[in-house]
Image 1 (spheres, rainbow, N blue to C red):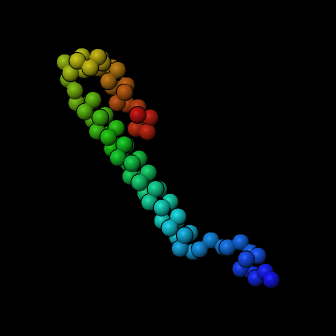
Image 2 (image 1 turned 60 degrees about the horizontal axis):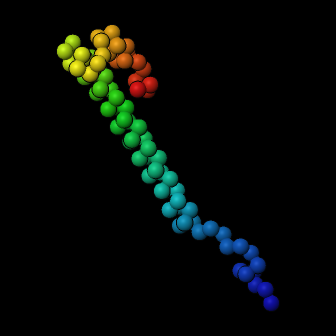
Image 3 (image 1 turned 60 degrees about the vertical axis):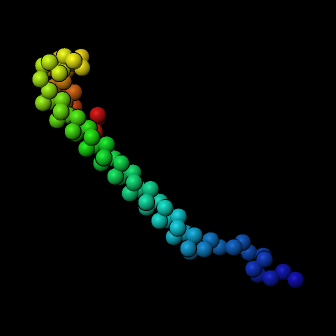
Length: 78
C-alpha cells in the first residue's frame, strides 16, 4: 500500500524558503553597501587629486592636465 506522503515529493518548507530569502536580502544589502563604499572612495580620491600641487603631481607622474582629465571623469567610470 502506497500512502500519499510517499507518492508525492515533499514540498519545500516555508522556513527554508524564508531562510533563503533572508540570505538573498543580506547579500543584496552587502552589495549595495560595498558599491557605495567604493564610490565614496573614488570620490575622495578625486578630491585629493584636485587638491594636489604641482610637486605632488610630478611625484606620481601626472601633469596638471592629466590630473584634471582624470578628476573630470564621471564618478562611476573610476
